[in-house]
Image (cartoon, rainbow, N blue to C red; front, side):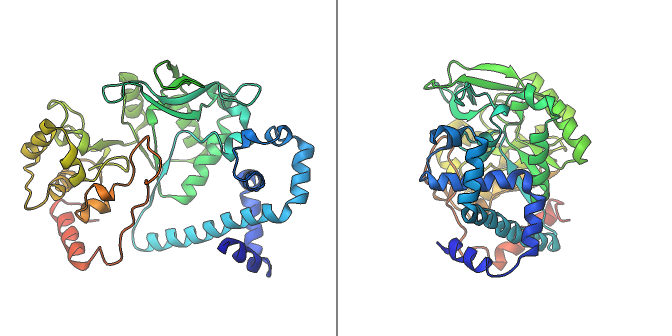
Length: 385
């Protein structure tokens, strides 16, 4: 309702900057605004449950909606413009403070998205626009049924035929939003797990070849040098490891994964390489204090011995020190760990719905004393820039 009021006021004056934004982003913005308008008209139902002519984007039906719902379409366009304007101000302010922003790009998109509705020919859909195969991960030691994500898979051969234009638009836009892009599930570009649509679990999936570095070579050829971090976690084959190495992009080293195995574990600090990014944990992990409470006994004992963790100092500070001391080019720790928080502050639990991404730092939680301590640590470990 607040945005609706903002829109009414927005329309009271000419917005040349808004019109320019619409022209510059027409490739994706028109489809997005039309999609959101139709979604509202259908009380939030997914596009594949709309009537046939809207589901299949019949030309005449689209023209009628554009005429009948011009104001609603313009509203959704305006919300994107306002976000872009505000985000640009945030990014400029961060840059003035010497802060670079890392943004995340998931490999897949949702079935109920403007992307799939607008370009169904780029995805593994049948003639009725239903998924043939969906994304996920095979069973492993932690999940007997595997992981069934349910996202529609790309038709990589079709994408390659038009020069990966969909990916070019996507990465170009994100490069304008962020200074560095972290690409999720990077191994899926080497080979991806395809699960028959309708299956209740991921047991019957098959591995299929992805585009490999052909995609990224095309992206850099068209867009120039990209600043990318690759999420190279999970089921890693020699082919995946070679692709990461050949790409030249830094991969991820998660310390919470380091202590469940032997001394050859690639996440242990003595096995880190300079061209990498060390994390205490990602958004999918518990906080360090939460991890220490729930980790297998042998893993915690190994971590305590290896890192000389001390409860008086706090296990979180011991592990963060290990990240800062790592040879990895970049070190990432979470605000929750800096604030000595437990599982109640966990950001996300994979394969669950509800309760995720809700943590917020309270005003005053980050104080001058903590700032000075962090600055001193950066000096000690040679990470002041």
